[in-house]
Length: 256
Image 1 (spheres, rainbow, N blue to C red):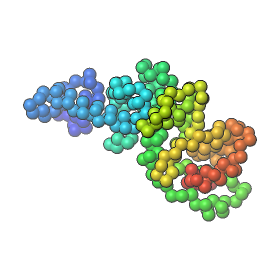
Image 2 (cartoon, helix red, strand yellow):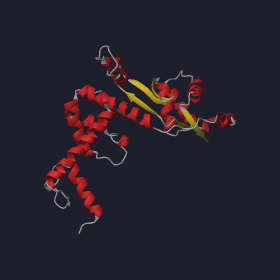
Image 3 (cartoon, one colour):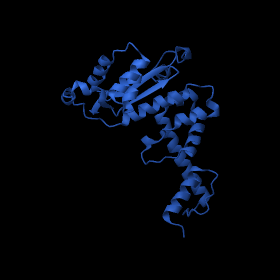
Image 4 (cartoon, rainbow, N blue to C red):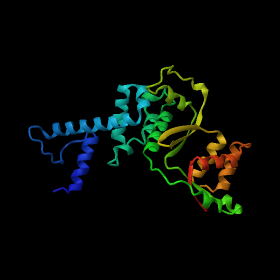
């Protein structure tokens, strides 16, 4: 007699792998065969998860069309079945799937647009932190500034792309009434995606500003982060930039 855990594992395998046999999975299917009952359940699961992906990636859906999206979503669900009961956590590897998806090879910007949409998803649902204690920060001796480590706002993400993904995102919003074509020769972008006052904002960053915030997100000490920022952009006013991000709560905590 298989254990409950063994039955659950077999059932999950049968649901997410259409080629998996239903044998060994006891299914009470009054009026239907076990195979037919499993197909109904599998169809409901795939439909629900496809719609969850579509809700997280509406711009990808508009870029590729419903049929393409449904096919890619089915592949994603089989390869990356949900590991959490919270559907907001489902879809984090969709960009990786699109990068390797044969039908998407011409749309070279597609994975980065997906990364932007996932950043929006994460930022929207992230916690709201306490504000940085400016009085405590002011008490740090100046000879220890280089040792400071800052914590970024949890509802923020950094993103860099070789393509104008923010413009692609903007022209495919439902309210956009202009042209939906984007010249890829416009080049890449570095972005801070952050939720401020319950609204998601996009802040294009210079090379140095991106390097500074990226280093701080990686828990680098401030001295190291400033050095990396100046390597990327030698004439960057790091002190003014840091004051700005502290004042606007891009950084919400610190330690020594």
